[in-house]
Image 1 (tube, one colour):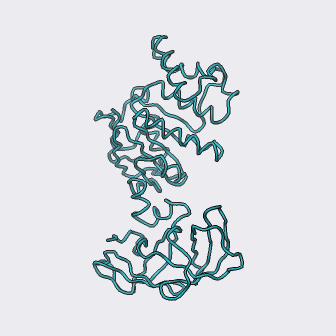
Image 2 (tube, one colour):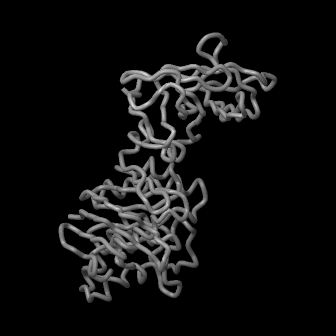
Length: 362
């Protein structure tokens, strides 16, 4: 079992409030990823779950038991740190064994767990080496192995890939996903990288300024962001966000107009909107394509073309200095084409009201 429940969690340091009324339920065996910009409180929240810090108010439960005041050592959790936190004077084998020997586990059981973890993480050839003799990726596997041998109720991982280079991050990310599937153990994973969140998570928790902005499956957050912050944070390249005016609104559709002749009718419940209201239209770069011009298209001035093999990323500016990014499924675009017409897929448009909240799509 590994269900974790947080109820009304606040954390303040003096007069500075870091977390505000966090309510969250992590399912048994779930990979839950906390994502958000630096300073949003995600690592603080992980430390509270681990027992390395205490909430100012609120309740933490593991499998239904209140552990708010229980020490970290008694919670049955294992944490993997960004810095690896390996003992440099010990061999890999000794690092893996250290926590088990401290609880006086029989040597035969310690050896069996180390052997299994080393096989699973492919670190058997390094068991007699010290951390200083390992690469960054190997150190990270050892740090994960030290958590695995404990057979914890849940794993807590704090930015575990941030010290790795780009290529190694991709391969280690795949290994972590495979490990989670193999162990079927709850994992709570902290990252500032939305790509990691999208590829690893069963569910994502998007945080900002100590609050939860949205919780959901990766594609749910991508396809139906709850507000402008989530819309801009989830997805790469980030969603295009254009300032528009509401022309008309009903319970079934909203007509808007914007820069460069933009006019669109969006299937959404606009009952709370009225003509003249300010709004924001969102469109993913992958939902923008070249157009021959005419009705339904917008004019833009190309500022940058990025050729990425099978795709071309076009950066452009519309009237009013509104920025637009389009990802085209084609190889290249004539660098001389500085003025282009673009079509925004009306079925993939998102609308947000003047408060930045999503207008429900139909």
